[in-house]
Length: 136
Image: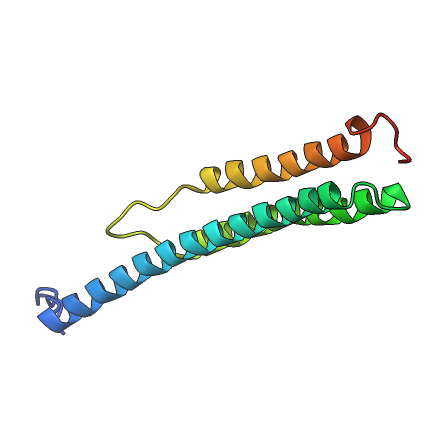
């Protein structure tokens, strides 16, 4: 191509290919958002299992064992939320939205850290506020 030649226009097939690629990237972003929602649901389920375990086996002997098992599930729920947020944010960094507006990463962080903080507060309440002592 000579210095004076105008730049070549992309042909229609190239434009359609670029549009399909852009839309595929948007679909990947939406799939990542659905996956994040699924992980958050799993996080809440783990927290619910922990609460349910403590409720069902509250009179367990030794009493601290039911609390310990419930604590594992509750803290796992908080950890899952943080892990899901980190994966979602890493994915969003690699992808660019083209035709729709993706959820911003601060929203992912706020939700994940709220769930994690809630699981910590719930764990503290389980051990400290439940019956007033740490042993039983």
